[in-house]
Image (cartoon, rainbow, N blue to C red; front, top):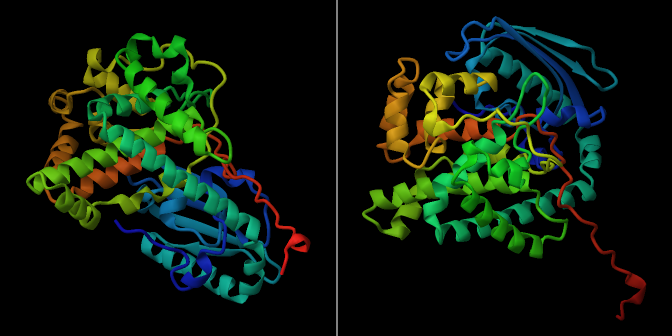
Length: 396
């Protein structure tokens, strides 16, 4: 399942255009460089076979990818109809009918490319310096955060399972009915971290709080939110797990293992996860009773909880490392369920390969969805004003 780019024919212009994610498209004003896109599709997904239809209506930036806007699961759907309404003078709504994803994507790519080429001069104007500066600032800050967390976790590898569970328990408080909870950092409150389901997670929280002190010390755009900190902590923990596996496969040679992971790993799939940077912290603890005690839960209870947030047996299986300190024991329990068993076997086989592609890609996809449940991302977070230079005071 590869990434399909709408703008593959005009790559030189893609980097110039800001591309907000679909989840945040409502926060962006409509302008002449967007497409009003309505998609109606038949859901053809093994985890949710009873859902008949779904509809997406959003504003897409021209320079975007299928992976960025919808996630890798997009290509599992069978398309019925896709309507494009160019918000630009001289264009009229375009209707594409197809039962094949490939045909729709080819048509969409063609229409977007033609419109982009015709209006290249106006697109360059949209990509103003301020937007590019903000993106660069956020990217540089994020890179520093990852470096700090990676160094800290390397010195405390025993905390890796707890960091993963901390991120899961902070996010899985999401309630679809009330649109509340989710990865909002509320687990930092003493009344929430002390709950039975969060026992043994205080050390992981304290570990991240120490890292936060260092991160905040070099941040030029304000302190990092706990919501971002906890989810990026989980990302680094996952990456370190895959790196450690690669090193073991190279007989313990760290240099060779690092090269192996760089060459065959799926780190390039983290694009959308990284883009969701700017979560806001909750001001109060999330309600009690939303998170199971994983070590005391039956597989059915776990399935029901994952189903409540829109996940199925596949996502439950791929998140096995997040459900407790002993992944093997957790997978043995999950394998007792006939719906989860095939996915456990699939990911165990994948972990035995050099690249672990199936397991890693599905884990990244699931983490990306989990880490954004119910969140409004501030895409200007951590940016800061650039000091202006007074050229009149320069001595030549």
